[in-house]
Image (cartoon, rainbow, N blue to C red; front, side, top):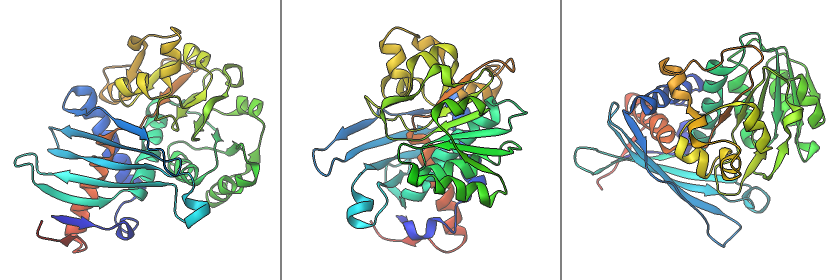
Length: 321
């Protein structure tokens, strides 16, 4: 078995490599060459933590495995650790033997950012100039850096429940040489692209706070009950997702579907847009919404890429297991 420790990930995986891995696996999912297993996601009743498993199998890439981990909201304050903690396990699909164990914290951040970035590439207007961020935590910086590579943005605007965290976004904007402005939620009407990345259980963004032609990537809802946007926004938008089953059960679409506002059939896979079997955006006035629930296959794709890189560079640790 090969081990790639968390400390080595930053020197191995780039945003570009994560983007390519996620885009390819979304396409494989839509073509039926890869599928995700049912998600286990539970509140464990200790440290307010959410813990679970995500897994899947990519027949084309012969990648089989799972990610174990979750969200420990007290980590940063109590222990100086990031709140998201996870490990990815890869198995040999021919024998079932354990193939690799890979640190999943940075990979989770990179693959989540890559997913919204893929959605921007394929669904946002080509002339998008203003990007809006809802949420300014650890993951938001990854999201913004990846998103800024997809269009020639000229301005970043942001809102966060705790405004003292907004300098995180301003830092990334400054790195890119762009102006940053803190706004109220009504100010999101200026944005051509909006990314929401929060842990909210209540709708933050309302339908009338989004302008025609906007692309929205909802990246924080991955658990039953979580919610970042008004369900009416999904009525106004054309809705795309990574995995339809997750979108309607634990993703942003769960609320609109449960209320009978949209049907499962109205939620499309972004992979179909990548493959060309769904037209995606068809007008500059169309609102598109990507419900990024986070699928196990994303984790497996980036982990498999990291293992290959680690072996090539002599970094992977081999153990008899």
